[in-house]
Length: 497
Ligand SMILES: [Zn+2]
Image (cartoon, rainbow, N blue to C red; front, side, top):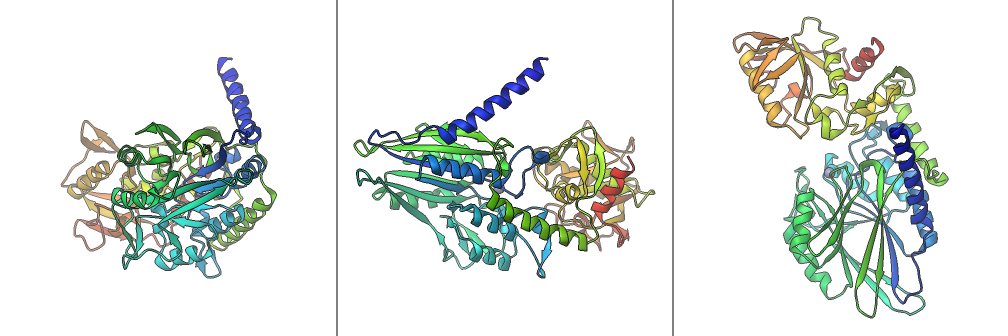
């Protein structure tokens, strides 16, 4: 009873919260200049997530229009990670992978104002990345990301001054903004400078010509905290990267704000600038995005267009995206923070699927980074598209013979990689007090094991596991798995249970 009541209460609170933000006046005629910022970060899906209950860019577009009606001085910011990875982005269209083209088009129609780069922007090939920059109608801000020749990208601003003029008094509120990205994704075509050094340079330049400085970042929370503690001149940090929401008040009690990934939540920030004192008051509001916000019709048309294009592409690959595979009674956990640190019901389902073509296999192994959904599939219908979302890269499943000694090294490396995509998932393995068991028997370093493995992990391309590749004497591929597709195997596994 109590649980049901708590559930109802939170529904009511969320509804009230959303209504408040959109209707409470941002403009009181108090001589101050009022600016509203709508901030979100880490968006991979253009549709709602969590079975349609949360997120959805078209819903945020409605919120944006409500905020604009309340305060014409409303700007929108995106704290990075938008080009990749996503299931839709892997679809082939006009001879090329979409690779974020769908997201840029949707955000152009959304009328996003400013974005900084996330680490996942550089998952793209150089030509794809440059093409996305050309398609973009919003403004990129980045202070520490450069092209391979060390020069800034021509269409990217290192900092920006946004003047907001009060029509009545004629006075101006000058907002300075700079952008930082964690230097994690070392693609050949990108160079990073040290974020703190870059911040120092930009703040020095913005100092004399602005009333308020915003850092738009995509970096780890500890680095954001350090930034605010080093630079009290920053008035607000709008971030991303963790995929979970944060509201921290650091340094000079400066708000550090991040929303949940896939716009499951956003931040609305009201700035009240007093031209007399030069001081700016900052009032953030956390806004969960749910079905209580209607989808904006114009943005939804663009979303639907790209979904149809991608679904056609999946059909050409032999998938029927809308087909229902099964009905589950429990939620399948594909949250990145879980699949990269431990086994979940979803990782175990996939690990068992790898064994399907090879009844002779002793165990299976795959890299947790193959799982990209970063979402929970709620109980109920599981469609083929859900599985494409789980494993957007696909790939074959191979059978290898591996020496026990090498297997031990690989399993231990998988544990050492906890927290990242090279953390390994497996079936028929167990770790007991630091030692490994295969099928409930202690791993024998002298024995040769039969291993079902995804082709990416067996290719030597996985971080820290570059020795696991064909041509290694203790690791021999005995079946290349040419007629297998990891996604089809998971679909078959779900159907059989
Ligand atoms: Zn990120």
